[in-house]
Image 1: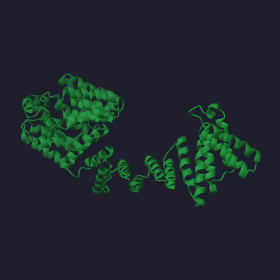
Image 2: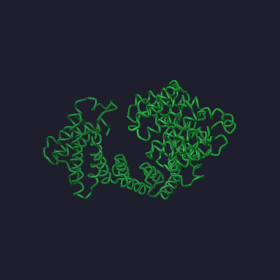
Image 3: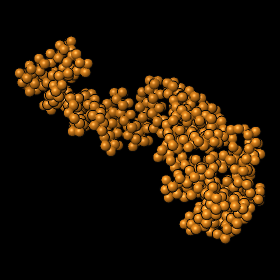
Image 4: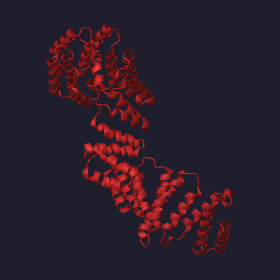
Length: 540
């Protein structure tokens, strides 16, 4: 019995005549071996009646995909069909033996395996498949039989059968022995330079450690097997995960021309074009998908997001409204969907409706801190200062270790709310005091800065009815002056980074404090003179 690669070589001329961009059912086998069972099943079923398909072998791998997914009845159906298609093909007997093992009938399994090896004497690939059947059934109970089959495969192939090292690599992976696993997969590649399974599993093992090296390995595979749908798809995905947006979208563009791509891949291509900031082509591909399948969720999403990125806010808002109407309650809707819809609404002047989208998103994703932070900014832009402060406060509560800048920003949100409270004295006091809590946290953790004490002074006034000065505010502005005086450049009108404006604010408010609150005429006069001197420097 010839091995699968040998079968392929006999069919190569016919395959090329049918279309140089497809490996036919062999793509399905590659997907199975890479552990992508649904993709394998799709291609194997799609190509079953192709003239180039070895039906017995295709049935075996269809059976194995069902077995991997736990459907023993469907697996048996395919293995039986494979035997009926070609009783001399040894693979389906291995499949039937695997089912016997899972049913606890070891003797029947051994009879099936013996029959398979009789049809394929010294075929190490068959021997490894038998070892894998034992391993899948019970790696502990059948440990000796697994090793016995592996030893036979090593001996019969003179240690050169790639599938031996794939199984050994998989066994190491199950033990999370990543180094050993990668080494085994590399050995498989050594003995079969265009072994897709070895390359893909090797790249998966290495990607989290060294993404660029994993990508290089898949590039090698694609160079050797340019028509492999698995190689094209896996490399494109690794490009995407490695932030190589342009390479990812370019390769995906080639991949979706392969007859063995999947329907969802075209929508995925639209996503990759989007990440490469090619919004017009992303939109074009999304529209092509929707022309065939108006319900495609990802394509609907890409259509409205692309329109908004292209600043076509009116059409983007319409498309977004359509997206949400058709996908109401869909758990795949994410925060960015709401944010982009809000952006479109803002772009057409519907700010109040944009806020609704943010509020809806926050209700749906209450633990999303960044969303709360964005909502706070939206409220601020709409001058809804109390809600802006509350949203930013909620954002800070989601953080394990808020930064000093977080505290400072929160104090600013509460300053706005207190300063615009009007006749609402309760709001003024609550917001002012909450802002003081935050600015004091910032002061406690930072080097002394004039801006921090300016915020302290402003909040101290803002919490008072009429925004009046008090002793705490005065002390804060005295500290502002003290810190500014440490650098003469702050008072230098010729210095573009001078702090004359801040000096003016401090002197003016200290003049008010000493004149109207502390009733210290001398101090009031002193700060009046200083204020006027600064005004002169400012040209006022």
